[in-house]
Image (cartoon, rainbow, N blue to C red):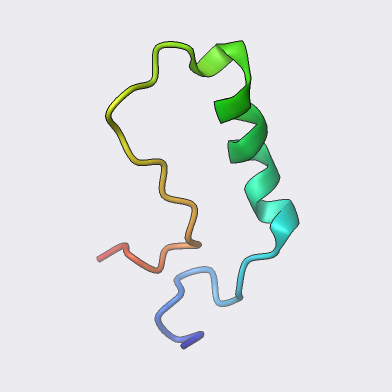
Amino acid sequence: MLKKIKLGRVGQFEDLMGAIVYLASDASALVTGTSLVVDGGWTAE
């Protein structure tokens, strides 16, 4: 599994905090219909 993750480690809750705070803030008010992928490169090709 770790070989598939480009960063070479499994994410921790703290790794998600930036995205969570951003999406919960007014800074993301115009963000619609998109995906914010926080997966350490798992889905990167």
